[in-house]
Image 1 (cartoon, rainbow, N blue to C red):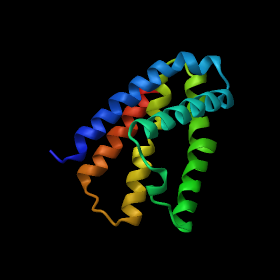
Image 2 (cartoon, rainbow, N blue to C red; image 1 turned 180 degrees about the horizontal axis):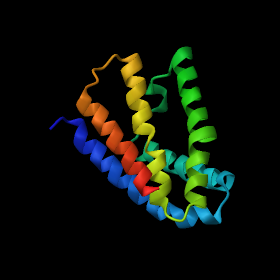
Image 3 (spheres, rainbow, N blue to C red; image 1 turned 90 degrees about the horizontal axis):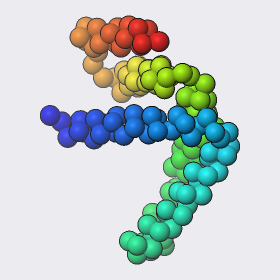
Length: 141
């Protein structure tokens, strides 16, 4: 087994738990309220982490301008596009599994992007896997 597989499974399990326990909270707050509360908690947690680990913030590597641009673009995509869409889809659906089955089609989009930009190999076996994922999503929805 490749070394990344256990991490991917752990992430999948914890993402499912996160989404399951988020359903009730999401119904009580607007996206803006949720982001503000979450960022306050993350800020406090970060400060506690820095103090406990005695991290010298002057030693943190500073990104160059192009890396900073990519980080800012990623933050924009996450907080202005992805998170609100996930938040509202979970808020408005009856079963969070339905929303996540469609959201998780990102795997197929990522596979297509990797094929185009990284020139990775694509076989009939992988094509069959894509068809199964699409059909499975259709059956769940």
